[in-house]
Length: 268
Ligand SMILES: NC(=O)c1ccc[n+]([C@@H]2O[C@H](COP(=O)([O-])OP(=O)(O)OC[C@H]3O[C@@H](n4cnc5c(N)ncnc54)[C@H](OP(=O)(O)O)[C@@H]3O)[C@@H](O)[C@H]2O)c1
Image (cartoon, rainbow, N blue to C red; front, side, top):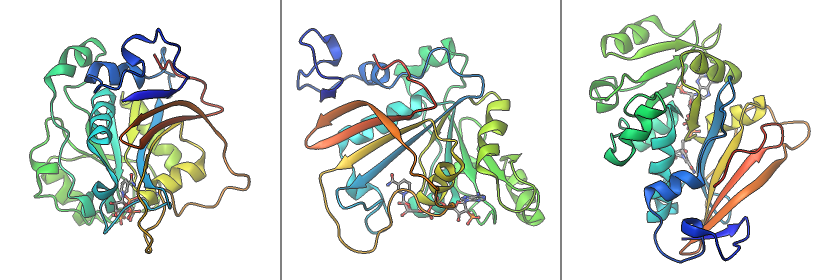
């Protein structure tokens, strides 16, 4: 792993361009949240794209990924209070609960966090498998973020499975901005969304994203795969983000952008 941005200075220490694998602690330092954390929380997205803009290959993001991407994926999870994910991704990727990692246990206790990030599934229809490990075997209860008009029988099934329901919309769907505020009100301020594209598009359209961690995979796929953000009302003027960090390993670029209004987090 080496740092491309900010440009290496020669005395970069552990985050310098030394070509070796970075430890989880070094990656955690490179992806530190802003300090102090804004009261309203911080919404970070982590996504991967191919060079030709595909957000998946054959319905999975794994073919676009690499070991370093998976290490960063794990570290971003370990830093988060909650992982917000759309029901489409839960269904297509067979989502499981976040797993406990010993190397982050102390830091999580010190930060007042639960032992692992809770998974919060955003869904209107609640067509989810409540007998799956995501609901039956989580370290901390899985959250279901939905609208007040969600199907009552599916809500009952979710509750029976131990899921915690968070309402973030008056109809069946949720308002993207309310996902953020409702979770922050529950104490989940370090918010990580892993998409998918349908949910990310709505977050972008609503202007509630603070940060995008985007892995650019040195692969091309052609075909019909959609990009990393879709749906959501198109924004009138394209939203501008500022690159604050780029790492590289094996031709993969690990970029980190913040929205201009969000301010700069500490990067080192
Ligand atoms: N490139 C990447 O980094 C990345 C990351 C994640 C996923 N993916 C890929 O993306 C594909 C899945 O895409 P997707 O767009 O279907 O996934 P998605 O965004 O995870 O899920 C879409 C679903 O989320 C729920 N949802 C979204 N916005 C909502 C709102 N405002 N209110 C209520 N529910 C809402 C709906 O669920 P209900 O239908 O249950 O109502 C909707 O059908 C998969 O192939 C996956 O591999 C790629």
